[in-house]
Length: 221
Image (cartoon, rainbow, N blue to C red; front, side, top):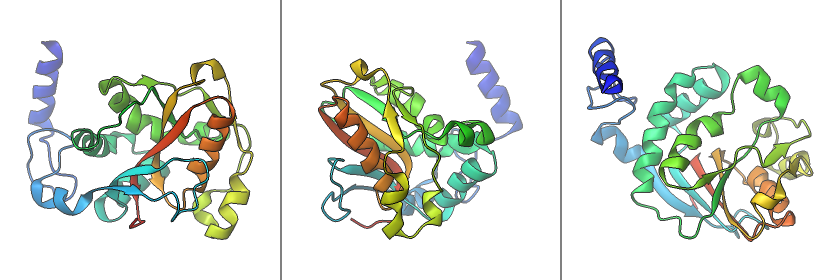
């Protein structure tokens, strides 16, 4: 009751607006139909096309561009974590379309502790934690660790990204993933090198299968 009242008061002071065009919408984070059409682009990326050796495949919710690109950059580089609602809303739309059959647990791609301290949060956890729990999945944010600091992947040519990320991750509490089908989540899929290295680490620690889910990607297939 109190939460509903607080939300209603906030809506009066800060009316919900579409993140793409600013048009009035029913709830915070919601996209209007005209903006949603070009943004929502559900697809499954091919492991063969992206030379994924360990990741069984990757679902993508949005095309990386336009308003989605700006929102992700604001969250990652400008500390505007309040903008995650618009992206979390897109994840909710995807959940009604894509069925993640047989998933036992969800694991986010981790940040190095230094990078996390600088940013104040892991944007992938920010985006996926609530969504994961609403889907009824076991949320495991502390199983996969990034123990070696690496150069930002977006600064490197694709030919150097696999080498940059190799051996950067470690699993703790491996008993939580042994024999389980893992959904590995990240904000952006570019070449897939990071997610593939994470999948390799999880499989080596006993996971049965690792599939990916990324909020956005510029890849077409």
